[in-house]
Amino acid sequence: MIETDAVVIGAGPVGLFQAFQLGLLEIGAHIVDALPAPGGQCVELYPDKPIYDIPGIRVCSGHELADRLLEQIRPFGTALHLGQTIVSLQPQADGRFALHTSAGMRFLCRAVFIAAGVGAFQPKPLKVDGIELFVDRQVFHRAPAQAALAGQQVLVFGDDEQALSDTLGLIEAGDAVPASVTLVHRRDAFSATPDTVARMRQACADGRLRFVAAQPVGIDVADGRLTGLQLIDADGKPVGLPADTVLVLLGLSPRLGPIADWGLAMSRRQLVVDTAQFQTSVAGIHAVGDINTYAGKRKLIVCGFHEATLAAYGAAQRLRPGQAVLQQYTTTSPRLHQLLGVARG
Image 1 (cartoon, rainbow, N blue to C red):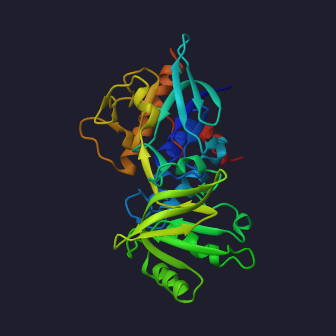
Image 2 (cartoon, rainbow, N blue to C red):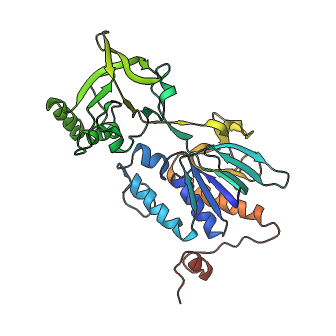
Image 3 (cartoon, one colour):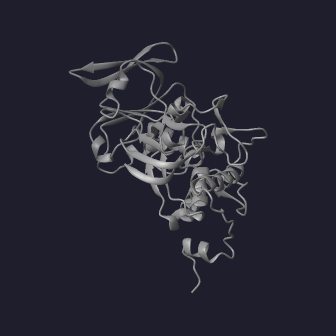
């Protein structure tokens, strides 16, 4: 059991900035996120696209924004627990909250900040009966180590930049290449960049890669192992493809998940909050960013930053009853300079 002042659910830009504001108020926090890396929607959905509306930064990519926010919280030593979701949240008799994660971690905290965006991002599954039995055995949503695929027959499902880039990476891996790589998509059109699509088509023309336009309808199994997939092509004809490993790279979709079962007031699958402390219907639980709703709500990163600031101050008032919560300025406060590691001798 990890005891801490606060747990932030979500490591997107708003969740990371929430940890920064808590750090300035000397409120210790741990961050939990379903994705394997911080950055949230910015990194997963548009990592290299330009963002123009971050105050003081003319333009940056999703990756750059996440990197800057991580650097900003570095002085506070905020722990990130990635690749797991909060599966239960239970108020305790002493006013604290017990949280359990899908990876078996347990937290006991005095404040919770839900910065889960539109929900925890989960890989989109391949909708074929029975294939779920082979997930993490022969079916993966992220490419495993290259050496593990050497000499194998690999099927890749997907059409976006990540899917095509990963597919090309398999055939450009030097000696540790699979015996065969087949890219599968329902039609001969892709959402990847033109340059990446051109590289994919050239690889097909060179015989290093095969592309099949078809939809999966079933699996082949022998001796408890997945041996192939059954598909229907654009003309309605059956196609059988052998497979040792299947990579399902169909992107991510957000799911609200267990949050909907925590007894918090909701409207249209968003958490209802006040606009003074961005607190939910349960005292001590705050919601910031795209996950919340209130009159005049705007789903902008800069608005999430504002919400995180007021939520941090609201939590400080609750965590320190009877004490004044001083508003200090990073420009002039010696204490904040010390916390940020910029104290002037």
